[in-house]
Structure formats: structure tokens, C-alpha cells
Length: 547
Image 1 (cartoon, helix red, strand yellow):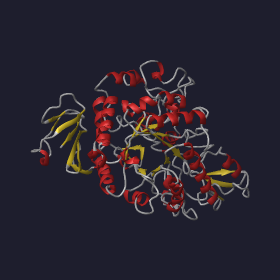
Image 2 (cartoon, one colour):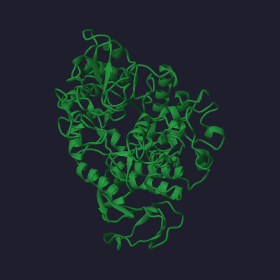
Image 3 (cartoon, one colour):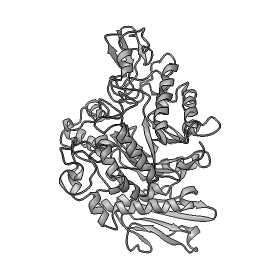
Image 4 (spheres, helix red, strand yellow):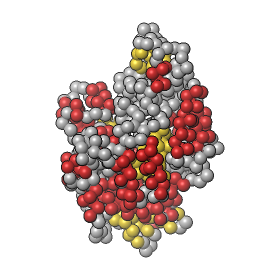
């Protein structure tokens, strides 16, 4: 890494299928992205993260790749991608790609060849095992679809799939597979991309002999034997050497990752990742998966924030996010649809002013909310269908659907709401998926006109943090740790301070300034209400003070 430019940046994530349709076929595409690049830049972000753009059968909407060196025909072609990439660079924005190398599609040429026999050049590109005593090779569960093994009659063996059946796991122990990965990285880096977000990268090294897991992790039996595996750092070091040939960075996704584990990837002379997406703060209203619900608790959310802020400080760099393609909409979870603007703007403040690199997911900046469909058959996400048909089966259909309404990844994948015209301005054709009916009230065009909108508030916050050394580099100190209504923290840098005050309450709260700041003259730099009152916080009020 020639420099650590990613530390002072913020990124906008595009899940392209639902972003904007530029050719009228009902599917978002690169033509649409090109048209909206100035809009993205206007948010005051510095880069774009593209979820997978590659050819795919869409069993997991792009995370099942059938060709790593091309663009899905639904989205355009390599020429159009280069056009988007070059224009983004002209606008001063970096572009990072998803690198999905734990698994491919079962329609990838490697797997098509691998399944033919046990003795062809690709036979060892995937993880194959014989039956064990007439049963599956081990007792591992898939995270998406039943058990983790699928039988292949051609080879008379089972292949491993930690995710969907159409997502066979690559055998990263095979040096030829690692060379393939490095060639793929060079292909995109030579084209000019600026880095990678590496999907479930902590899963790519499996334990020797694939032992049975202890059946105590719901839907994830076996995870201790494929998470942070025995050769993970060795393999990631190889990939790191490729990135050292370029001025790029690597962001890893680490499900169930702790701060202790994350630091092994991001710190010291053996550093193999620059940033890591973890999930701790997304568990404040659920257990392990969003489908297993529990009431939201602010203290849980704050504990996760505090842990990552304190334990990474000075040792590694944080990622900051509240939404992405894998999680339902945050206003519907941690905020309030009744206090839509108020909670949407407060949630922006609560995470954007922590130390780290922020990510904003498409639609988050206008406060998009969860969709509520009346049948599981209308949902398309493979994990949502699996959850519905696997857990709480004794509950009524209504209760199980309510869990889907609260948890489905499909809620983050409804078409982007651009205006109040038909199909929310997303397409002139028939949308590939349902548009949230609230698009006439929640859309970009209307929020552009409203100075107090969530959209304009995100712009204000992102612009402010970019220019503030305290917001970028300051240490983190939290107050009122036991409060279930207040999230208050301080950032400090070179004897300058920011005090961030966020109310998670739908009611007015009494507020008296932190003792250490009571005798100091401060300035209210940001507030999500026009006329804040001394001594009172209105519902979901957020304030940023400078000292």
C-alpha cells in the first residue's frame, strides 16, 4: 500500500440489479449507473463498491459466479464497465469490486469440468468427498440450504457448499486455484479498479479431514472448522502480494468475527487485509441471524460499537455501516417508521461520526424501509426461503411471515426509489422485483427539494466529516453506557473535540450536557431539528457539538 487513502474516504454501495435501469428492461444496469454517477458524487462520498457484476445464474443474485472476467449481460458489458470506471475516476471516486472466491456457481466452467470425473485437470478445484458409512461426509450445515453436501452422480461423490447448493466451495488448498484467483485480481486491477471487497473471505481455508461439527450452532454446524481455517493467513498473504503490485486496498467480510480475530488479519507485519466487515452491531435485535428475533436493545448496539472502536484504535482501521445487501433496512430495525425522517437522520449521525471508513448503501440515504409482502412465494432470496421453511415451523404462517418482514435480505434489494412516478422512476419497463409501495412518499426527487430531508442530511454529515480532522482521526470515548435511550460519545484529536448526542427514544428526553463540557463554549455544528431546545431532546434527535 503506497498510502492509506481509504482511511479518509466514504463509500457508496451499489447492488446493481435494483439501482437504476438505463435500457428499460426492468433490471438495473451499468447504463443506469453511468447516468447516476453525478448523483452519487453529490452525496460527498469518495468511492463506489459494486456488489457482483459478473455473469451468474443468480441463485444468490451474483454471489454465484459463472465467469470472473466478464460482465453479466443483464448489466452491460466490459466496454460499458470501463466507461463507468473511467467516469467515476474523472469525478474523483475510487471503484472497488466484489471478489467472491469461497465458492463459484455450479455453472462455472471449472465446476462443469470438475464434476465429470475424478482425474481431470479441474477435479481438485472443489472439495469432493465420498460418503461416510453410507451417509454424508460430515454433519456440517449449509448457511443457506439444508446440509452442506450435495451428491453428484457423475463422480459418485458429494461436493461441499457452505452456502446454496448452486454455490460449490472452491478448494483453496489447491495451488492452481490460488493462481486462478491471483490472475482474476490482476485482470481487474490492470483495468483500473482500486481494490476488492472480499466476500466471506475468512471461510476459504477448511480444517484438515473436515471433522464433524458439534451440533450447537443453529444452521451453522461445522463453522469452527471453516472459519479462520489453518491456512487462511498463508493464502491471504499470497493475494496480498498481488495487491502490493498496485495501489489498491482489500476489505474482507468476516461473519462471526471477533475483534481479536480481526486484528490478526489487519495488524502487524503479517497484515493481509486493510479493513473488515464484521456483524456484531447488526445483532442488536436478533441472535446469529436476523430471522431469529429479539427486541432491539440500544445497550447491545452500543456495546458492539464501543468494542470495535476501542480495541481497534491505533492498531487497525474500522468499517462503519448500518445497511448493505445482506441486511434489512435499518430504520425498520433500529429506528422508527413513524418518526421516519427523525430516526433516519439520527441513525446517520450515530455511525458516521465514529472512527473508520463509512459505507452508505443505496437507498439508505433517502431512508428506504422494509417491504412487507403477503406470501413467502413472493420473496426470492434463497436464505429467506430457507429460514421460513426451517425455523419456528410450529408458528402460524402470519408469525413466520412477520419474521420475514423483519429479516429478509429482499427488503434491501427492492428497486431504488428515484421519484414518485410509476415504478418509482427505477425503470420504464416492468421491474424485476416488487417496488416498495411507499415510494410516493420516500424518493430522491422529493428529498432533493427538502433541505431537511434525510438525503440532504447525509450530504451534510459526509461533507462535514471529510473536512474535520477530529471526525476522521479522533479517539472515541462513550458516556451513559447503561442508557437504553441515549447514545453519547466524544471524539478527541489534538485538543479538539466533537460531542455526539443521539436519542433513540420516540419521546422527549431531558438532557444536560456532559460535565466536562459544561463550562466550555461549544458550537452546535449539526442537528436534525431546526430549533433544538436547551435541556430537551426531541424524539430521535441528534446533535454534533464542536469544542
